Length: 99
Image (cartoon, rainbow, N blue to C red):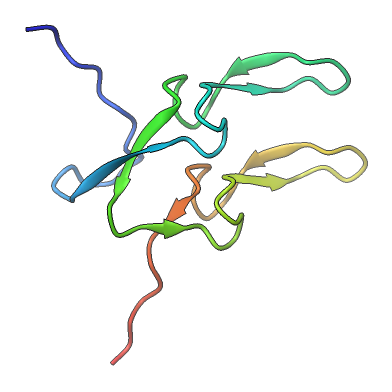
């Protein structure tokens, strides 16, 4: 039986119920355009080129980046970096429920 490659889980305990989702940062392609004026691609730093990742099933679309996994970090030109809240995954924990 061939060994299956582990998907990135980003510190989430493996005991939780995880589901496979497309990487929001690279939109499932496994690479991101880092070129300023011309297209230049590098491996996605969020999913390690797999285009997919595992997140807990109760996670919701990130409210800070609206599920894109990206934040605009440029002042003069459009330049994106992974979202601080979801770390580029596009998914974040649900808000706490207070009783």
